[in-house]
Length: 552
Image (tube, rainbow, N blue to C red):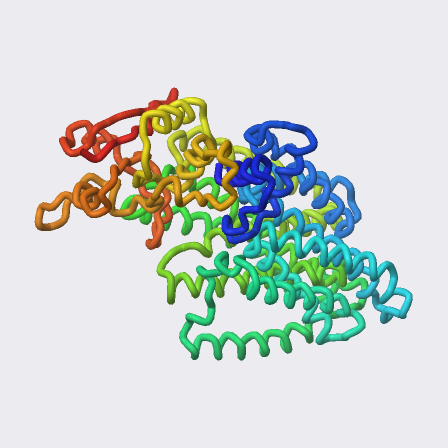
């Protein structure tokens, strides 16, 4: 609802609230333009935006797979897996988030770069015609797409752009003529630094301030980076024909021998270990639905065969940049994870894993491409393998949807709108509301005084919110050790009414646990709290209740 609200704000008041969402208003401007020319309600734009993101992302990914594998069946199958699996890509596409648009723009940048690279990595060094063929148009388009992505979601855009830069830096170091496209990525990196210094997008990076790491970690990271670039440069080869010789065992036989003997036993071993670790953590720490294990197993299957597929496919000149892309994203993730462990003590780096989904599917398709090249697809075990992956992927996706019925919801329902209307009608003044992440923007959307046409009005002028319920929702957290009621004390200090919008499954910050859950007993205990008054409620068909409480 946050992004729908900002889109509505732009459309109705005809100005850009640059102080909102770190100044990255690309998605909201796009939606407001649709509203301007079609007069479609912004709620409906957000609701049906997936018909744009799904089809455009599928089109880009299909063309990318066609360039990589030159096989229509593989391209169609790859798009199908990307959009239907639970690797995270579909989540980004069907939610009305800037993440979806930034990802689409970034994939388009990679497609344009990859198309040019194919003419530069042939066995014969590129001539001037190859270097400058369609260069001005491509570079201008890439810069335009890059700026658009940065001002849509700077964090997502720069993770992708840095991973692309890693690829082209290696080619540039290997041979500056073959890696000439590193120059346009360097321009995007410089533009980002300019925008970072001049605009509000710097706040999008507050969680990833690598300068806050210990100095020896930074020195070690830079040293490792230089060594890695020099090492990987040696592995870039432009000769043809190695891929077929390797997969048939005629050259470097240890690749084929390793796959025949170990790849499937490794997969089975990892699955057993994963199930055991998940069971232990879930019993003692996580309290998650068992359907999550199916998603983890699905991800493990794609990850193993993605890696092995790209290890083999990198023996083709057009396969090497894909392997380096996977490596670049992995390095970025390890850096972010180190920051989480050493500085933040949170798990924000987990969101980066969603960005792996395109390369995971590409790698899996590379393994399938190998099977087709060997004509092993006619073997029963290979047919069974492909059918099993597709069936299990569907099972993992939809079992989670069916079983985790009270999981985190990012959709707005009519019953919730009714409660919001009721609250807006029968409350006044600037109240303090403790709620789950996302609720403020529902209230802003339905309660913002557009009729005043006050462009200087801020959302903080309407309500005060605490979107981190950690320490407030659990009944045992309502009292300090000396017996003082935390909520009533807060009410007296702020001298305003305090409300709780209670959700039994909510996002928390400042901890390694991303979500917390209230048990049925804890939810029921709220009925007996004499310092709270239940003023409204919205309950789903599944019995999920979101009550509103007023602190007496």
